[in-house]
Length: 476
Ligand code: GDG
Image: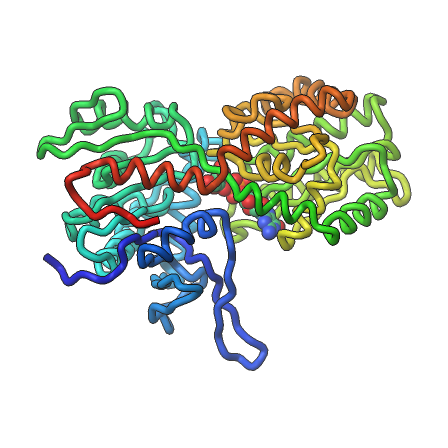
């Protein structure tokens, strides 16, 4: 067996939970980028000698020594500029991302991109093999690393391996387009447990394995010829609910929320959208629906404003540039047609903000509008609910976001149906406080009970239960 390391729990993700920074004096440092995933895993990581393997987010292979941050061993994996283009922007974000999101944009298939994907996945697998202790647990994250489970199992058959997909897993009719469909399925089958956001995604996977790889399957289990089994199941991801609520309750956030409303001219209602600027998120259609409500005379720009935060994302990918231009044009046209001096219909912000500002926006918004064409889960919807501790505020939510399976009391919409969206936006705008209260209370119960710690614990417990005779237990 290969030389083993000391980590009992290894997270393998495209990105490290820190960003590379350059200080004013030219020296380099790290800044923590706290996400839900890292806060959920921190307790287990600390207790069990954890390591996190990922790309630092900038091209180049310089100074990539493992380092310790907050008791976590961080292991950087370098990508060359060409690999960023072919593995990350190419195969991950121009092939898999659109393919897995219902082909909302046309996926591009290039053989060199896949070659790069294989090479980078090998590098991540080798890094994991090196730091994992004997019989350790390795948890691989997301669509950029689907070949890692198989590669890692070949290097280290002693490991217990989990995989979690954060985005949707498409139905067989779409997945079949992928020229490398078999390699991807076999890559995932290297895991003991493959987790998805929704049960339907797990079923898509099981069906594809039966059809394309020819393995025997029964319900949620795949039976491999060598006697090993692989389980596929749903583990809907969530947020640090208590953390968000605490932030939302802070005096400074409350003050900032009031200042935001003031700056918008104290409209009766504030609509809010917060998304990465991504073509899956349905930003264009939602802004059109809102603007038509004004044009149709349901309310005026003094009564309501739509604040749309679009966080810059994947800016070197062609489809994202096109989208940005389209949204720029649409916002310009709507404001030109409907706005008055000091009163735009849409307040559009192409920028990213600190968490405190996000919480203040959630506090200020009367109607939160989340209308993706397809979304694995959508954490923004859950964050809004977590921040509404007064049980007020309305959520308009796409049926095609994973979150719709849990947040049933939202105004659910089909984002392809503009008239239907208009009706839902208007209903949310006019809803009486009692109705809002009833809906929000129920949704808050859901996000409180099922937070990100619940998600991580549930996955890791299920993973320990696969091959119980094998691998050491984690000590949370
Ligand atoms: C993928 C799947 C799945 C956004 N702008 C800013 C900011 N954000 C934060 C939000 C939220 C997160 O980023 C976005 O998460 P979403 O779930 O909404 O969407 P994706 O980025 O597409 O995430 C998705 C998720 O993975 C987890 O599995 O739910 O379906 O597509 O937390 O608050 N945060 C800050 N400033 C910003 O400007 N601080």
